Figure 1 (tube, rainbow, N blue to C red):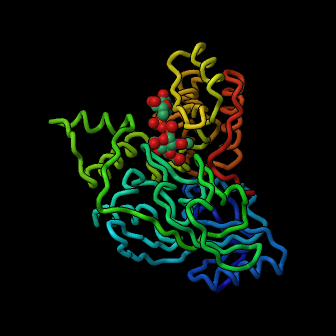
Figure 2: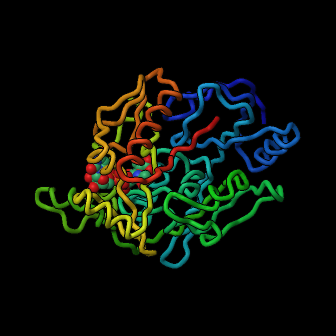
Figure 3: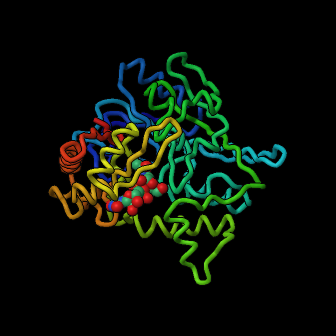
Amino acid sequence: MKIQENISLGQYTTFQIGGPARFFCNVTTEDELAQAVKFGKKNRLRFFILGGGSNVLISDEGYPGLVIKIELKGVEYKKKGSAVIVSAAAGELWDELVASAVERGLYGIENLSAIPGTVGAAPVQNIGAYGMDVSSSVYKVRAFDRKTMKYVELSNEECCFAYRDSLFLQDRRRYIITRVDFKLTTKGKVNIKYKDVAAYFASRKPPMSEPTLSDVRDAVIDIRWNKLPDWKKWGTAGSFFKNPLVSGRKFKQLQKKYPGIVGYPEPDGRVKVALGWVLDNICEVKGLCHDGAAVYEKQALVIVAKPGAKAGEVVNLAKELMKRVKEKTGIQITGEVEWVN
Ligand code: EPU
């Protein structure tokens, strides 16, 4: 394992933004990862784990510590009754895993098609889209525990999953994921209830009432392609903020004031507010830009950056959006993208 110095980080992120890392290393095995962590500890460095770089915004000044890029590879499939345990190394590309699961007729992650990033990052923020969260198919997670300096295996329950949240965010920096096992099934049913997905199949000619697994993957790719920016053209990290959770009472108040507001009831009585709707219809932010950073024209929850844009420009725009939402609704929104500085 080679520790490099002063490596520019922008090239490793989908925002294409960020100054240099003081120290940088690629790890391809669990041993190398343990060595890298030891190097960081010995030199009292802060450290940061980089996967696909699709959910981070790195400061223009860069990162003063050690950046560890996870390059562990390999996928295994093991049959377990009608289920299949898919064991994938953290550095595998998420969408390649989804594609091969769908090809093998395995249900459970198809609605999460075309999400950029790596397998190891998927449980961290419990990626979700089109009515499916990855937490519903995670079987166990293998990770390096920096507290004990040993590898551990965590069950689904131990991962404490919630909406865009998990143990790996709650106990930040303690665990470094090296492998994720998913429990998928050959005897599943497609989930096409999400508004956009249902509308997609209803609008086919003739309408499709029983889409297959690969029809669902194709539909999701198509929907994302039409709603989310092209990562090759724009710097972006997808949704910049989380959809906020508010009490049922607060949601009713908002509904009175803004009758069209979209919200999704949670099992605990709270309501997850569609922030994209709020930003678009109440705060009227579409078209807003700060130098090289702009609100994406087709999805107000997404910030895009023009080539050459600075992290500071994105941050200024994000602050403006936070201020507007607070003024109009009283809600303090939080970032979904990780700010690294
Ligand atoms: N809406 C608007 N205007 C907008 C954007 C949205 O009116 O500019 C409305 C939509 O019409 C819809 C509602 O708001 O009624 C929700 O919008 P959408 O279905 O696009 O989903 P979202 O809540 O904005 C979440 C995820 C996305 C994921 C989609 C689809 C979060 C923070 N974001 O977005 O995930 O793709 O659902 O399932 O939960 C990501 O995390 O980077 C990401 C793209």
